[in-house]
Image 1 (spheres, helix red, strand yellow):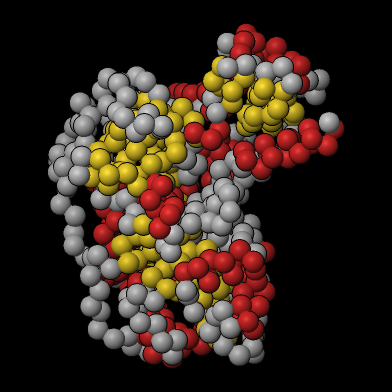
Image 2 (tube, one colour; image 1 turned 180 degrees about the vertical axis):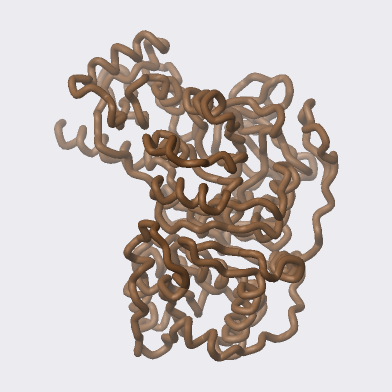
Length: 558
């Protein structure tokens, strides 16, 4: 596994990384053997040790095999919010040599039905507040077995934290055919068969959010997921001494890798949160000495805007990491100057099991995706011809590496559109536009589909948003494209103000500020001040929803 094309390489890191030819489950066995009494998971102050985690994983795996008939390669759906049961369920499916199908807990019955039917899952692990969405699939025969868990079963210690109501909800009994309670499954203590899984077996089918039509299932083996986990751990100096805050949803690869697989690979502790609450987060960081946190910029912005932060000791927090959107320059500067923390930006997708490009810890660049990590060949190409573009020119980012998915599940057409064969290598088309500087660092310009064409000028919303974060009264901003009779398209900014913003601040005031800080063709011609921006389960701002709503509003007025 050799390094990519970059001219700069992080100090102290090997140029090559030999990946272990083992399963993801093996990481848990190693951690539980080395650190049996160490906290593996902390859930609102309740602790599950590594030995307890392994024991419960084995019991659930035995039930999946012996009672649900799960055989090697069978898909099993995992439909839950962040919880100890999610971690146990994920590793139990792998221990049973099944394939994990993580499903967004925000999905309702029809969306759940599609993922279950497309993947061919016959068994599902479901949290009790979501069972109503899974129940019709049992009745229709789409599912044969549903194991229902109550989060409150794992609240084993008293806490003064504001615990979400879904977590404190008492366990409910279920009598529907095909349903069994998690507690009853574990009490059976069924032993799984001998583990014979290989590194190249299928491990995960992760469904994309689906911008058009149905979501696509990204197929990953143990090797592709392990490649991203191991590369991230070595790149960032992973250690058993770490304690990671896991608030990004575990169904998504950002949370799955940063909040679960990464800590287990390192023998570290995962401090789970189910819902974002900055007041709870600061107490957990202080109380459990959290040192590592992977999160989207929107969460980081909210956390460090908390006026109560000064009353807590968060000095243990030494590594902030994330991706999915560029960290605004003004926020990066605040982290460095006020908290002596560098936000380590990286880049990855569901198709790459997260980490594939990363900023060197000691020499990162702001608002930068990073350089190609171990064994990765990253290039900028013309999106029409796929020819390599010179340094500094904007084009589509394509990626070759050991963490790139195998294919889209049951979708050869989509696979063919997304995978390029170049120089004897398989490259993934990302759909992201960017450029590479003279040292091999990659910078995001925007999503290929997000560009605004204003009178022939290319306007990149991410760039405009980054500048707007420099406004002293703006908390969050999202720039979208709306139709314009003269320009074809124009930029509109949706803005959330800080609580301290003066009441007489108007949309026109913000537009005037923009005129002083960016080129005229980039200035939003309209601004809407709103209470909050819609966000996905992973904390990303849902710009497509805002753009579609704005266009429908414009069409209704026409």
